[in-house]
Length: 374
Image 1: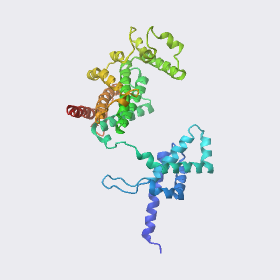
Image 2: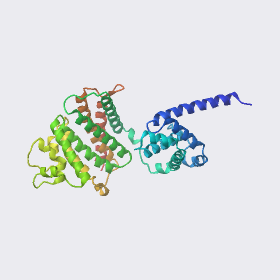
Image 3: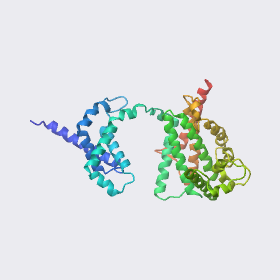
């Protein structure tokens, strides 16, 4: 005889599955037709092959203290299905994509690829040293929040076609977004214990910041900068310098140096070596101390560029030094953002600039303590 409680429990399970599937559809709808994805996911879950691998590939232990539950099998399968399909059909028309999803042979192959990746998921995660705990220290957390805030607001302004105050809006927005994304990459590198590459990318960020605050409102200089970017693109595509560029290079000048900083001649045409320190001369920043330290910081980061860090000793807590510099740079960028849009950088009643200032100062104090112990 059917127990009424069993019937109610079954209805509750079905309702939860429906909610889960709707969430998965919304999450992956831009990568794959949602209803087909859910259908294939259910077929995989019912297959003998998949059920045999479940005990060896998924975790069914629950850590009550950290509130970690069992692995989300549905999410894992859909992640694989959607992204494999998207990758397979990256350059196909909508008609071809639709045809593929109606093709039984293609769908069977898609399911097999997804099951293969499910089978290898523990190997995929095996040497992942991403330190999620580290991302919660104040300096790391505040940088990520400020970067996300700025990227979110910039995206909204682009969607609404809101222009920044002053001149050179496109250059400023484009460069600011690149800088913010590079900062996010540095955060990820520090999380994964890859400070050598973080140093190298920090060197790039310092240079980008100096370019940003050198060009600033100067539209003619921005045009010249973009022209040199085109020269670089031509060189990278062809392996040789264009005739137009070659004619511009001063006598006895290193071509690559001129490619990097030749656009500075639009500011002041004088004899120079076209190196970073000369770019720094024209950089205008509100934080004079930050600018004065840039040359030493840039040189220090150069030690870890071009593969040189393979022979360099990287300290266990050097990530604090990196994050402190990023905090100072980000504060300068928030100041420029505020000037561009006249907008307070606050979220849920918290002044993010004040918070970032506090955590940045704190990071320098903490790093100094461990330096004094050496």
